[in-house]
Length: 119
Image 1 (cartoon, rainbow, N blue to C red):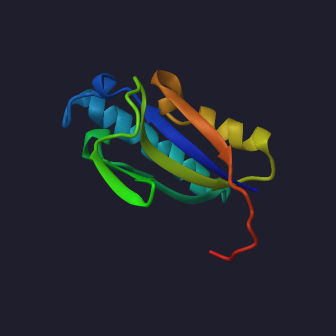
Image 2 (cartoon, helix red, strand yellow):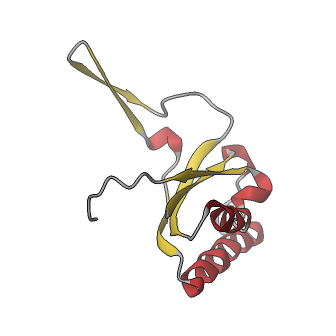
């Protein structure tokens, strides 16, 4: 079963780039992802640009409306994603708890619905 881990972040809680705290955070993520890869559960993983760089797309009455920025104003925004392939939800939750985002923000775990398509 595949699971999507949405790695949430609080933008103002991120360490300044190129500081010891930022290096520690990057190392902790690399270690968590490496552990997933070694366990054979990692499918894909990547950080996302800041939510302020996002574009929200809505179609209303056949008209496409583009808005700069996130879809909603929330304290936490999605900062990255990880897709894992685990035997069950309990295993996926274990891997989610190993992500640094679980300690200072949150990690949402979603089951990826098998639509029968091969990707």
